[in-house]
Image (cartoon, rainbow over all chains, first blue to last red; front, side, top):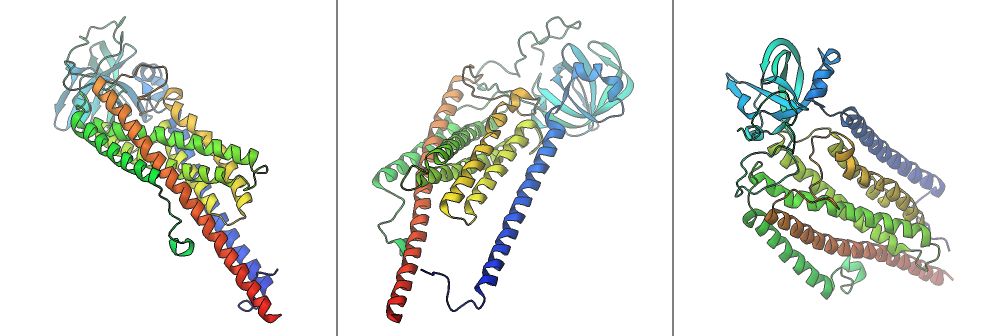
Length: 183
Length: 253
């Protein structure tokens, strides 16, 4: 039985071709948009995903290659080293028993005040004489963007613990002395 | 739709009405536990309450996408042997994917708000966030593919293949925080690892996962029935068209 419209369409073949053509374009357009979106996301991700940040020890070790390059550095903020003056916050971060002096020129996130909080900083090495708890360094890290990297540990405010917990042995075998409970 | 199908065709049954009430009560209790009873976090303060919606949402999304993949695989394997062409597998895959996409969207939205408070930014292109948004876009593509006009079997087969390809990203999203360095923290709940969460917060999180699961089941059941009703509408419209054409032919004869 023929179920195609009888009277409305003068040239059914041409009408069918037109419908198919329009449908094909719609499918093609949707496919292109989705592939473009997926490609953009993948490209953005691949650029950052594999090495979102360098830990302090790696950033210091790779300093000759990183000088004059913008990158992200990660470490825990040593609580007793935090100073703030005229919109500039200075502090020291540590990871793998290596310490870096940081000069940060933007507003830190709210959680920055939590002792030993891990932070990811965006900026670059700048040549200077920086005094850290581990000695004198030839560079400091000049940062203008800070992200707080909180852990997957959650504890009630009703507990006695008042700060971010340092991972077990985080400061063991380090050549410098900082109290782990310092706040 | 009820005009076409009649009032007897509805998505609710006494059982799903009970399930709906249970889901509503469960969500209200979840809100009470998450917003009032559970304590603030020692580091994150009140922002930690986002945990009770963010984490269950992505677990439900994972579960929904597992269901989509299993149903799609069954559709591909068994569709030729079933009298109805295995269309119930296709419907289940579609309804589960819709719910999975909704909960992935909730995960992204709550994650961005949580990130603004804790990280200090709504968005970063780190591995976890990037793979999650890719998951969202891929399954949106899957749902778009389901809407393309084709005969049910061809459409079901195309969608099933797309569902199986899309699922590859699910384990990548979950393990991205272990495989790469990310701003996102490690998984809060993992099989075989003791969670680092205080008792009352841990129990609230587990309860929230249960409550959101009930809501997801309720949604999947209703979406499954809506898809079935849409198919019935199309079939009835086609039957009506054939009947009117036969009548015309009889008159002409």
